[in-house]
Image 1 (cartoon, rainbow, N blue to C red):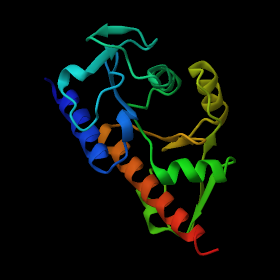
Image 2 (image 1 turned 90 degrees about the horizontal axis):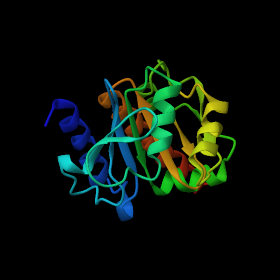
Image 3 (image 1 turned 45 degrees about the vertical axis):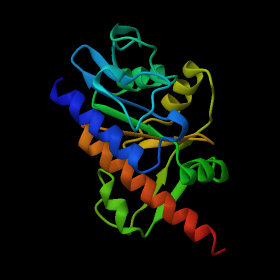
Image 4 (image 1 turned 180 degrees about the horizontal axis):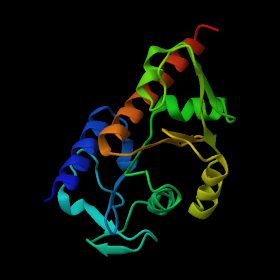
Length: 195
């Protein structure tokens, strides 16, 4: 098993330990020289092994491994084709991302949170930034079209009623984006209880 596989499996295990992959949900990938590795469909993310990762080309076709790619593997492929700087995509299902993406379908505005600085390109809590939300679809071509319309989305995006897709130029930066986005969404959800 190479370093990329180990690093991706570590990221998946970490996300699963947070409770962000309920009912085998979520999918995770990392770019390779010939495509990307992605989680196989229906696997318990708390128990993934190296053979639960499939190697696909940038059209989403399986090159190596057994099983079927995760349902949204084609969206991962579309993201890798869209932006060559993306080297990792981590997709989770959390309460905060699901609820807030339904409440704010035009995007979630963030301002005044210190943790905004964990998102690439942000150097102050004083800035106002928007976490994009795209409409959900079971058709991955349609979902990819929604994403392309809103690009660039340097940290990722939320899919309405679905969850977070974090992106990064490495697995480490993608993990940082995912954790920061989830923390920020938890803050927004908690604040909404006050009003």
